[in-house]
Length: 569
Image 1 (cartoon, rainbow, N blue to C red):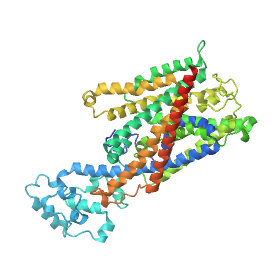
Image 2: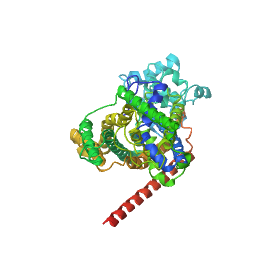
Image 3: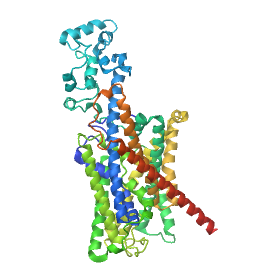
Image 4: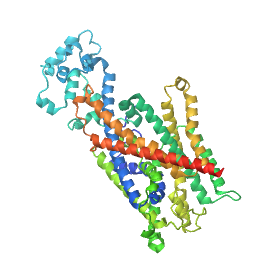
């Protein structure tokens, strides 16, 4: 939504420390994409796969710092707007003149405007109020003079300006209106302290305008739709792997039956309002980390027992594998659309960049370890291409689209069952959450249409159906979850992860430099270390190259498909 959300102790999930934030960030990024990485990594080779993981990790971290910086600018704008809305009659008209200089701002005639706490008597005795202010402490004496160097050093020009406007005695301190803590004022970070949850949609609206906002909601809706399709394929596929084919039915028919069962369970919940609780977050985190740890350890044991693949048999560099790797890697580092909900509740935000850098390094190491170990364990091209869909039986197979499938033949049956049901537990609970988020984004996207506002309940029902049912239809048609992740990450994910953060931070800086108040304020506390225009340009250039590469691949795929159909006829 585009409404600002204040995060205090009782905010969304409450506030939390840096340690808890590290866990939440790790849990946010490491999702189903980690199960799709090993196959795409193996198809591209160790060198190309590692390079792409490192490159995407670096670019993703850079754009995370862009989002954080833009959030701080957004908070500064929201606080100034709150000040203007709460006390509109006490901001002198001269402050709304963009051409007025700072010295002219400070030299205002306060006898015309009076004091805040005397709203009832302002029109009757404006002069008397000001005289009492001046005689009590002399704060407004020599108000025509500009700020001295000592005043500028002691407090920001913006604070000085506001205090001149609002008058010190009997007036509301503007810093209290701006939600400023006394200890933070000394550090000069109060104006852009991240206290309101500025969602990506709001950032796009503030800094990219109506067109940017509309385009963002189109892209985020496409991304969430792809996300749901991946979930709708992964859960039934995992169930089919555990149970095997139902008697007298093929594996595809069994899979489609599980898709139907999945739809019956989750689609009705998508029409309700459902939010992720702290306990659900903890349970998901536990299952995910235990599963990843088990897969890595079991693979290492398998290699140590002499069953692994020799280095000579492994693929080192295969550019044709980039087709799926590009999109899957982007999908695996996606977190930007959920950043405001993670960052805002953190109690102390003075180490955000360090916090995220540690998380991204840990995630990169986890991904590389998972993929390399998978290649040495199951990367032999002579292994059977598909695993037998029967738990605890069969021979090891080549790396599968869902990496958990490789452990279906593990002789410790309970562990094999647990690993293959891991996507079922986590993704089934996430499907309604993503569908409800998509519904809300669709409502926002079509909000300019009069009928949407006139019939809100009908709109919500229709959007819930549009959000939850089409991904199920996609799951019935295809089981190629890697292709879905490649398209989702390579197109919509690329815009959300790279393009929008780069554009938002660029135009945010430009706007704040021209802002009639905030251009006098130091807003560099959350400024990205990678904010140089050249780096922003490189991020956008890489995105453009990736977009072109993906488009060419889609065209070639469609062309080959059409040719095969013609030849078949």
